[in-house]
Amino acid sequence: MAFIFEQQYDLHSDRIYQYIYFLVGHAELAEDLTQETFIKAIQSQHTFRNDASTLTWLMKIARNLTYDYYRRKRIISFLPFTAKYDTKEESFTPEKWLEQNEESKRLYEALQKVKMDYREAIVLRKIEGLTIKETAKILGWNESKVKNCTERGMKALRQLLGGGDEDE
Amino acid sequence: MNDLDEQLKGILRSERSKSMKEHTKQMIQQKVERKKRTSNWTYRAISVSACAIFIVLLATFFVSPTINNQQDTLSFGEIDPGTNIQKVIVLENQQPNRNLNLTSPFYFMKRTSTDQQLFHGIMSILLNAKANAVPWDGAIEEQYAIKDLHFVFDNGSELYLKQASEGDVPNHINYLYDPVAKTKYALSLEEWEQMIDLSDTIWSQKQISKGKWIRIAVYFVVFIFLARFMDKKEKSMYDEEEQVPRFIHVIGSIIGVIFINFLDNIIGTVHFGYILLTFMILITIYSILGSWYKEQPISWRLIFLNNMLIVTFFVLCVYG
Image 1 (cartoon, each protein chain N blue to C red):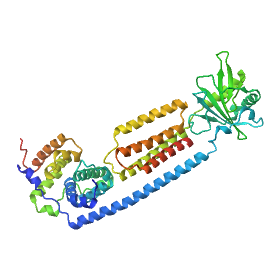
Image 2: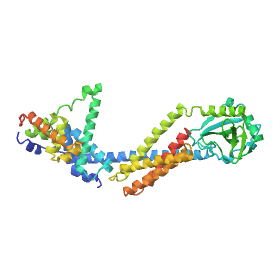
Image 3: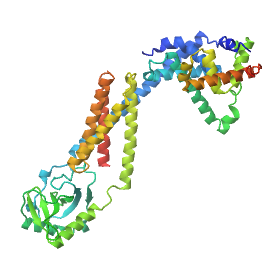
Image 4: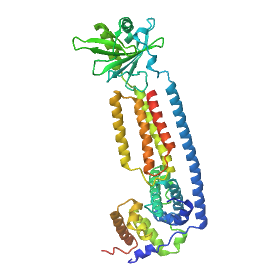
């Protein structure tokens, strides 16, 4: 199956952008990483296997690029200049469109506070509605890790939203 | 909080304006186009440079004055008394009856000396041999390793000799054999000691200098880089849905090792040329089998590039 950029971009760019936004919580950065994701996909389309859906494959690329971004950022933050001035992405700032919906805003804020592993599992399983198998494929985990992280993530999210732990 | 699942499902999604989406799309297309152009030029530049190096090396390799036939070498009877030894090449020959072209750069293990002090007295032995050599049937009695020597004289002439013994110790006789003229010369004890001293001293010299090892290491790194680069570029041009299975890699490696060992037994020494040829044949077969397995057209360009890299690497090693 060939990767036809225009077609795939029109089909999936919004979901890829949204997925990255959930991970980074910053619109501009999410747009940049979406761009990088599609560039990477075009360049490495020969590695695409038919046993995965295009969306799953794109999400995997997006996830790797997001991690690369965080890794770079962690290295750069050791430099004295950036350590002092580059702190603008430390806390989540809701976008205009989000300000109008209090419930979603709280969810976004809580999501940005949970551990990255939990956040990823919740986004893919609960928000994007992917299966455990698809999620495992994107994250490069085994299925039991996906289940564990989703459960623990939901628990942490409930606590952050002030609902306590239902199981307790 | 019971409906957290529902809340997450209904979470408000980001709004990307049409213009933003279109702008990003254009940016992606532009960037990809730019990268493609740069990458193509890099690929072309590296391929053309590699081809140029390959052609130049191959050309110099075949016109090199150091590679000549043994038919140009002298026999005992043709040694010019007025000339002097300029260079001596020594190689241990595991198969005494086999004649070797010691001037070939493929003999990686051979040792060469131009130390005139070592050659003192050798010229008179060779002249004695010229005067007293007797016919020889071409067979060497000795079963184990002997020393083959190749002399280069001031006047450009060359002489190929073998050094071995006949008969049981202590009644043995030491000979110098001339495989070209099929004659042999029985050495006196003193002459034998002088010849042994010459061949052993040269043979015990350090084979490859530190600088040569460093050069070989650099060639190796460059070679790996070029191979990886071309492999990556070529792979991206083909549909790689079906990967070459691991067993083909394993079978290829095993056949390669067996074949080289087999050749080594026949030749009796590490012969670079044959190894090179083996590699080239294996790479070609391997690429053709891989293409058949993947049901893709055979990439002759890839086969050529791979072979070219192998040749370049081997030639550089020899010249290094």
